[in-house]
Amino acid sequence: MRFPSLLAIALACMNPAALHAATPASPHCHFDSLGRFRVELEIPAGTRQAVLEMTPDLASPWRKMLACPTDGRAAKVTFRLPAQGARCFARIATSSNTSLPPVELADPDLVSVRYGPAVAEEVKVVFLSSAAAKMREWASLPAASYHANLIAWAMTQPNVASAELSEVAGNVSIRFT
Image 1 (cartoon, rainbow, N blue to C red):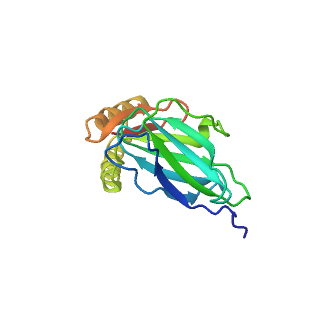
Image 2 (image 1 turned 30 degrees about the horizontal axis):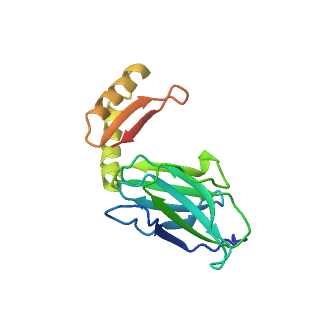
Image 3 (image 1 turned 90 degrees about the vertical axis):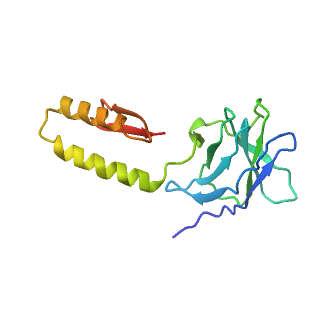
């Protein structure tokens, strides 16, 4: 079994120009199922950008690999780097600056920002258990009525921001607050 040879010491650093009341939490790093190096960081409110930086050794300059703007709300930023063989160090720099620096990778699929606190797993489990009961109750209804009932019910539940029918798959998609 081959193991990726990317050595990552992810360091959260605050840009001195940033004037945040709180500092970011330590990032979480791992390799995803596609072999990409993934770095996640909770950023505080007031942050306007996050930049993933890398260096082959700590004596070399940091290279700006990916950057993303944020709207100033607290968020979870995730960066993904394509699978590679080089060893390196990685860190995320945050700032209240609204103009992004030039970066080496500009693929939007390698960056994601999720605002607001994560929904607790127990909230999701309770919701899904209740939804399963409703789905069994309405199983004999025509598809249009079944979907309409499920969406209407979901929208009455706490922690549900939206519920909609996916026309392609015929599934009801739920987005939590």
